[in-house]
Amino acid sequence: MKNKLLSGTFWMMLGSILSRILGIVYLIPWLMMIGSPADQNAAQAIFNAAYTPYALFLALGVAGFPTAIARQVAEYNGQNRFKDSLHVFKYGLLFMFFTGALCGLLLYLFAPLIARQSAVVSTEVATTAIRVMVPTLVILPPMSMIRGFYQGNSDMQPMGVSQLWEQLVRVLFILVATYWIMILGHGDYIKAVNYSTFATFIGALASYIYLLAYMRKRFGHYKTLYHESLPPRDVSIGRIFKDIFKEALPFIYIGSAITIYQFIDQLTFKDIMVGLTGLDALQAQDLYTYFSANPSKITTVVISLTIAISESSLPLLATLAKRKEKEQIGQTIAQNIELMLVILLPSSLLLAVLAWEVNGVFFPFSQLGAHLLAYALVTSIALAVFTDLFTVIQSLGEHKLAVRYLTLGIVLKLALQVPLTYIFGAYGALTATALSFALISLGVYGHIKHKYLVRGQLKNVKLIIVINVLVALAAFLVNELISLVYVPQNKVTAFLYAAVLGGSFALLYLALLNKSGVFKDIFGFKVRLAVRGKH
Image (cartoon, rainbow, N blue to C red):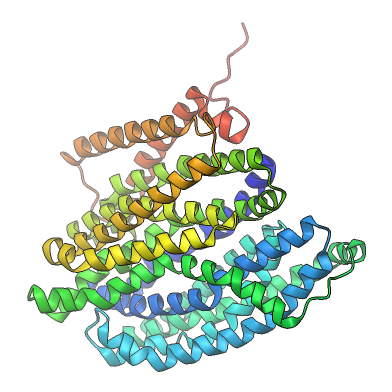
């Protein structure tokens, strides 16, 4: 069981993490080609104003269905009913074509309204950028269904690699198009932003090609499963869609959560800051870039660590829940949580300590931008924990509980948004999100602990937290002492400084995990940090 989880996590992390790293590394040359710091901030704001509603509509049209398919396929395969899982996949794929077209139409129609409420100066420019995303929204849902089918068969390789391939092609298209427009053509950054948003479509096509090629490669394996399968049950198409909807709707809702919160920020921030505090539209746009558009590129990488772990656990937990193996469920959940924390905490805390350098590497150097990035990284822990715990309870079939808690969380976000943003500005918007996610995550954790876990199954959690706090505190103190005499002021020195200091404390963290025995408990082996010589 542990090997399956670790193997699945590896492939999910390979695709999810590397694709997101590509998604932020390209920003360095992209923003340099865009031009001045003012144009860079504007380009980021416009790009984010387009990407967030696109991501929300995509989540509403996609997020739950692949996960629902993965869960149903896993359950059918556990009963040796591969023909039934294939039946569900086929009709789910047809439905996704319809969903993609509908979501694309809605995004096109609502683009002007969304652009008008967004924290950008030009509504017309934002409307065009949003509508450029429509073709991608049409073709992505069926592709996500194919990924869900692989996930349900506990085959995480195509899911991870296809994400990486999609992002690689997308990034190459962005850089080539921007170079052509800005350097060779001496064009304006708005056109470059539009081509950069359209790159999502090119990347999706590349992912399609890989997934279909992989399906052909695995055809023999699936053919064997088909022939060994029990006969399909006589279930109507209507019943199939009813089961899919019943399974998918909660996943859609939960899977859209972080994007919903970001969308709330996008629609409310300008009105609060301009209408209540007196900032002008350009100041609000810059501030939105600093607290949302820029940090989200970095925090997405941190959160994707959790997504890789939680999605790898889903088929295992679904199968165990079907068999009602409570002890194995508890052990899998415990390993899931410990694995999440051991990777999540150092990633967010060390990056927060090095926020000045990290912000400077990817974006224009800014003290305010660095402070907001550090705060966003710390608060992203709450978002990542939410993602993992809510995926766990949904994997166990407790959808109503997840929906109730998330609804409570959105109500809390809306209630806190105006007063906290008015008082604390951008920090307030981030705090409203973090408090909401933290509170509902505590509630869900209490439920999981009471129902599924037994004493001793989370024995490493406190030690993991203590080690991370000590390492982060030591890194902070060392960084503050060095800053008294030296602060990196260009991208190269900032990168080298962050790599050396961050890498040093990452090694310290690994040594403490190894010394305490936590590493061996979670990964099943102990790292040899030194070799004793012969006497």
